[in-house]
Structure formats: C-alpha cells, structure tokens
Image (cartoon, rainbow, N blue to C red; front, side, top):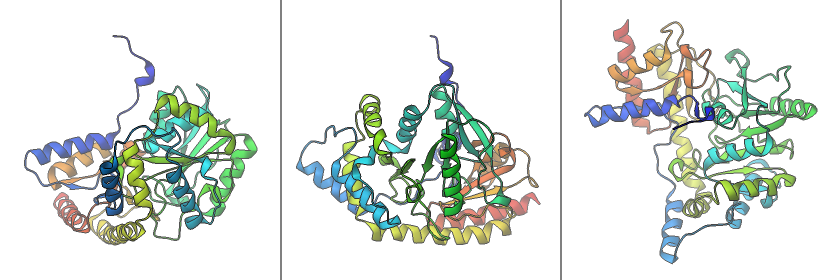
Length: 378
C-alpha cells in the first residue's frame, strides 16, 4: 500500500520508554516512573462526581463544536481569577486535548511549506505535528545560561510557538521577555502561539499569560497538568475574535467536538481548587527532593525549574548517548527517565529529563535508586 511522506515523523521517545518500563513491570520488576509528565493523582473528586451525576441523568452525546457554553464561561472566569484578564467566553474553544488545539492552530494559521519557529529543547510533538501538516519546523536553540529565553531569528517565520513554563526545562518567561517576543512577532507579521499547559504548576512567582499582553495571539492550555486529567483528553484554546469561526469550521470537520464526558468532568474540576492546590504542594515537595538529591547523585548541571514538574540535566560529563544512558538507568536502577533527544535532536544526546509528577514516596525512592546506581558506576 502506498504511503505519504507526511507520516514520516519521528517517534515520541518518552512513549517508547514507557513501553519498555511496562514490559519490565509485567516481568515483575519494580519501576519508578520519572519519564512521563503525568500526575500520579487521579482527576479531582469534584470532576469525577460531576461526571457520575451526568451519567445518571441521561445520555452523553455530541456537544457543539466549540464546547459546552458553561465550560467556556468557566474558563473565561479562570483568566479573570489567575491573570486579571477580562476574556469573552466566545473566544474560548474546547478541544480534544491540547494536541487537537495544536492541529487546529497550525491548520488555521499556516500554509503548507511555511516555516514555524520551535524552541530546542522543546516539546517534540510541535515538530512532528508541523511535519505531518506539511509545514517546516524551524529550530531555535535556547541555552541554560540565558534561562532558555529564545531569540527571534533573522528568518521569515510564519509563526512562533513558545511554552512557559517550558517542557522539558521548567523555565518560565518573564513578562518583559514574553512581551518582547510578542511585539517582535507582530512587527514581522509572525503568528504567536503561547503554550500555557503548565500554568498553575509554578514555584518561582506566577506564569504570565500572553493574553495579558495582547489579544492578537493564540493561547493553548489543557486540563491535563494542573487539573491532573491527562487521560481525559481535554484542552482549550483562546483565539482572536476574528478567528473563532475559522476554528469552529475546522473543529466541526476534524473532530466534531471534544468528548462530552470529559467536558462535564472539567466543569467539576474548575471548582476543585482545594484539591489542585494540594497537588501543587506535592509537586513542590518533590521538586525540593529532586533539587537536593539529583546533584548529590551526580546530576548537577540542571536548568532552573521555575514551573512544570521536570528537571532537565546536562549529562555530557557522564555519557554522550542519552538514549543508551536512559536504557542503562532503566535496566540497572529500575528508574525510567527520558533521553534528551526527544526534545533536542541536535544537543539532546547529552541531556536527560527527570519528571517529578508522581507521589513523593516514589520520588524519594527514585532518588535513592539513582544515587546507588551512580555510585556503582564510579
């Protein structure tokens, strides 16, 4: 059967690591999961209770393509609460996870063949989704010495996507840095996409939304991280008023709508701030353990983790092959970590990402195993 070159995307390496970890667990091994950015807690009780009530009340079918009006209103209220931004709920689009939001954004904004700037290190699926849509991801290397703040290159870019807090580094952009990037893009006619899915998960001040600085941006967020709802596959995007109908037409045809059940649960989650803040307290303690334990184990060159739940470590003095090093750690220490090649195809062979999204007991045990493993390596 013939195939399209659009399908020639790289694998999502962290998913391969998860599969190998699953095989070891199935064989009876104890594995500590520091590979995947997935909270170890379930969705908030209020989310699950809201869905249970809805399931008792009747069938859950299609919603309108843009999402339940009451959920869009709830998200608009969140922007008022978190950022002091008055947001028209009509600009909020509910999506099947942030992944669907990226597909909608890239399709709505860019013509095939255009260049879109992506930071490296950065979330790998940006590059792969762009490739699958016949777009050209343009790498913008960032550096720990500059807190991974990107510089807009002297290249004609159709768009730029930036995340803060960032995956894999956990670094956040200041209001000045974010504002300068938005202004530079707008001066060049470059569309600006702000990935804000780790907002709420922050430790050094608060994350700044692009909507505090401009309405002429695309903002993408998700219930996966702060609200601990990864498997529910529900996200949202905020678009300029003039783009709502464009996105609606695309969403109708590509996805029909986001899952009704997940939207009901998300309504409950918006009112569960006591639970979500308790989760944040858990990440904060895990972060403290990691910042104390990883350097003692030998992983002492790390990016400043202002938010999210990752430590990105330079291991160039330990190993030059991050994929082999991660496999060695998994097999010998029973700790799953992610090779940096997922996030930076050029420099990632000398970096690893450690996630601390799981329980504090798991993180403490993982650090213990890593310390023992590194000591045995000499």
